[in-house]
Image (cartoon, rainbow, N blue to C red; front, side, top):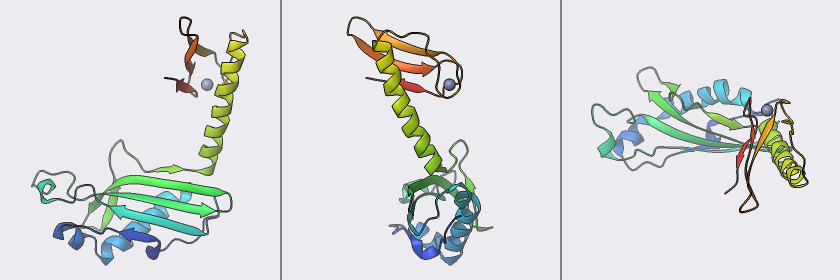
Length: 179
Ligand SMILES: [Zn+2]
């Protein structure tokens, strides 16, 4: 059950340029809050009680504002949703359409929420990787992926007595390299 999310949870800017200062107006802020409610909140799993967020631009300089610029209206956001079960971080790049006051996602860079279940899964995978390495050292071979059950490949450097990587061969559930 998501909690409440409001405009005052986010700090916008500050911006150095007039362009961004002017663009990020009340309409912009309302549109951003609507975007987060539509696209981000459904991915947050905890019943959050507090949100901290910021929206800024990495292109806050007139040199990025040329007529062919694709980053002129590009913004970045980071949000932290705090709930009794932990913190879920959301981040992403967005392009603002000032005519329609809408946001669109940057192609191939969709916003990401590091949800409670993703955190649990990463922790689980991390524990399994340690276990697989240990079992390999104890002589076990032909181990299977704890997630999908297909074969695991272990890259072992005999000369250095070093496990270089552990991979799920078929689905890539585990892809760990040690250096
Ligand atoms: Zn797998």
